[in-house]
Length: 388
Image 1 (tube, rainbow, N blue to C red):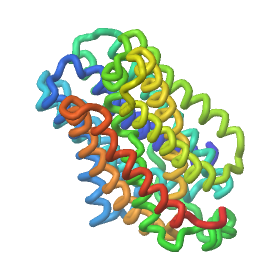
Image 2 (image 1 turned 30 degrees about the vertical axis):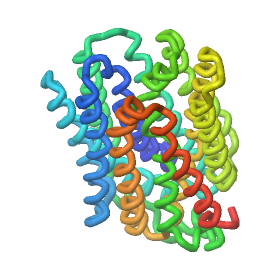
Image 3 (image 1 turned 45 degrees about the vertical axis):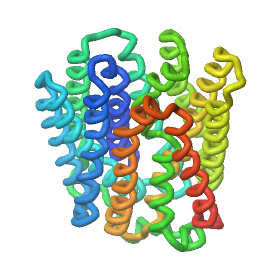
Image 4 (image 1 turned 60 degrees about the vertical axis):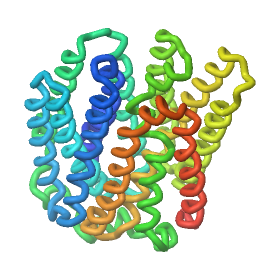
């Protein structure tokens, strides 16, 4: 098997898990009230936050062993989730998130070590396809009109299966796959400081926060509910919900054909486009002179475009972060710290957004996201390495 593919498969499983479990809330919205939905929604990112913080305090000396713990947490979560109660559902989602948190920290470190610099963006975009596919599946679930417990049961089976695949595909002993220092020179020898930020920790944190403020957690968790809030019919919500992950997959597949992708264009340019779309979504929401049908159509269009545009910079950012630190221990520690910040933001976002929409309307609920994204984008422009 080509070096890095095994680790890529492991990372794609973790990516699929995150998107599927996060987006599954769309299918559970009819079976839970707003408080239960908020608790279940926040439990998953809170689990990711918990294990990521543990990695900051005590980074694992061998990421592979952490991935084994990841698998066991996923299987444990599946068992807990079988209890038909929203409380146990929240506990199960916490453990699912805890496993995903470990996977997100450890798998990119291994992938960055095993894939040549020139080909890394393409590898990370392939992993992004797993995000899109699982989002597609999760957005189809609400249309099936299944009982909420059957949806939970499907999520538990998925979690247990993913955990089992982790154990089956886990890499062998550390020395079998990790490159020697001499071999690593062939991969990273020409990666000069000009391709690394002068403030790599700050760059990592900004990229992780942008992932939150650009609206990714909200779109993944509540896209169908937001389309409905805009006034779209159930049929339109369905087609929009399956349309944007399909478009994401087409876009990522197209970009994957190019082995030498410019990181600055994908990350800085990609986030700039997303902030531009955010602004027009907010402006359309605040403009009351449009006829209702036209306003609904424009709002759905801008949200759809935002969902598609975010997939490229968010996935490429994970690649850039892994390259900012030379030593694996630094990649684990500072990558964990950045992700912990992202999980904290995701927890706050998923637990408050829909409540704010109901209380204050979409415009005021979405305004802080646009404002913070614009500020973070300006900071990113100054922090990003000048030579890519």
